[in-house]
Image (cartoon, rainbow, N blue to C red; front, side):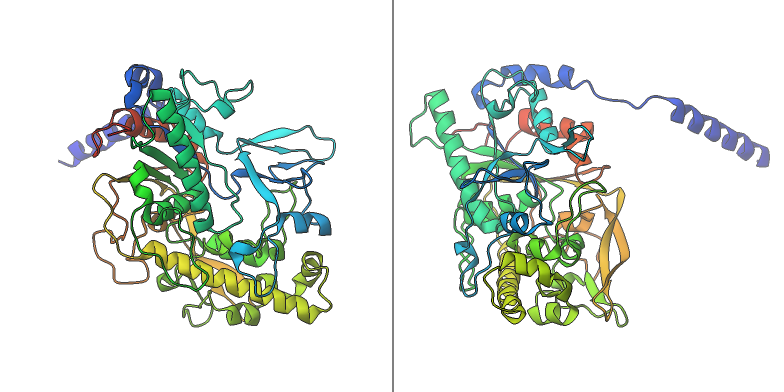
Length: 478
């Protein structure tokens, strides 16, 4: 018996080595999807693609300055007074967040990020062009990326639309812009297919990271922006009436501790790329809306491990975080050049911080409110679960943050955040407890942006868009 076990062990080792020596199997996507892509005809549901934070180019409409989209001589430098004012959201005491405008507009989805450092040549960093390439395999075509140097689309007509948005601003504000974009896409499809103005047309949505929060809010509330009195709109699923399938990729549904880290320390983009100071990041309401839920106990005291209320402005003042960091006063002076004193700058900064934190909590309540989606709506999740991802931060008496726990995820969003798993911070049970009624879940073993260029993602995405039976019968119009 002992000899038999030894032989079996040897065979297992040989089989393992042989398996490792084999090449990785890859599907031939053309063979699989050429036929459905070419024959689906008017049953092809148009697709709206939403990038995540940083995924849209921003330009100042008044002077043509490129606020975000390249690190080149033409782009703003957030490390200088004028550049900091360009990229930051204005701060005015007593004025609601939705009324704080600066003339900056989203002018397109960021397909590559151009960087030029000293004498080094300009080079591109792939961003959200990977989703567009995935769609190109299925003959989805976006006219804005059909130019030389863009994606080589094989489709004969435009069936894919990019949604560029100002990722600094609140999620609900961008849901209003999404509604306008979807209406424009619907009108284009009606015209192309000879439909009447009252014929309903549904679209599919593919949304990455922060874009997934915009999509989820839109599905629930349509174009209705959160009010400044703190109340919540009624969940009507008004936006869902226009959507057949929502495919959410790496969504921070329960937030990410990295958002707090960026609000406290600022945001860097690599060794040779400019650092964005904490006070500049702290003006952007959307970044606060990526904070983790308080009930999930993701930010705790270093000594007691008791949860910290990261939505209390007093905590930020006590810890010296973000806009209220004494070392950020110079940056505040750039952002508030008309403030007469340090005390006035801190007062305006605290007012802005409090508004952003209140709005973030309001958005969380709006997204977490129990509601049963309409029967036709499908919600599909693609998430990472192979990379250790920061999940718990401790806060020291000095205000310093330390990562003390990681969890499976994609290096930015944990698996449980993507699922919106309410077991976190509470009683563990065998089955996932989520307020989101997922139609399907796929785990991709890549990092946050790598998921979008994974062949497994492309394969499953095209199956959902081109071949999978639909709850609403598979037609874009009914």
